[in-house]
Length: 135
Image: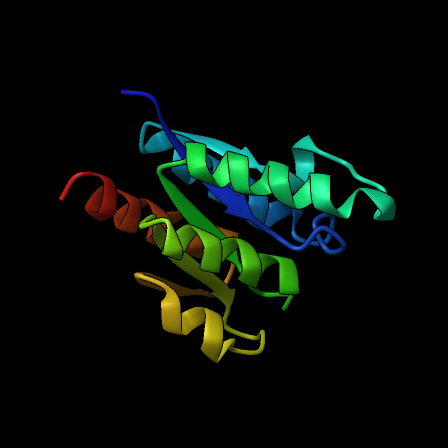
């Protein structure tokens, strides 16, 4: 079975979160799941806001679960996670322990990982993915 994880991450902070994103992708791949990072796959200009969100929803519909890296609070991540949850997808909340907590996003997630660094993130995410994808 070809499973996919939609990875939601702040577009504006994605370069600052390179280590974390690499750890997420490695954990996802190690669990036999294909990672899909919308912020890496598509670029839209501000006039294409409707097309951007339609494509994001299409990609979430095709995914098996959503992983939300929330160390940088971004409205788009909350919208993506909320849409995934409404579609019955499992949502995993990730946040560096030094970052601000998002009560609303955390409140809809099925699993939470508060991590110290990219190594800790990768280890914790692999455990959760194995539980979520192989109950």
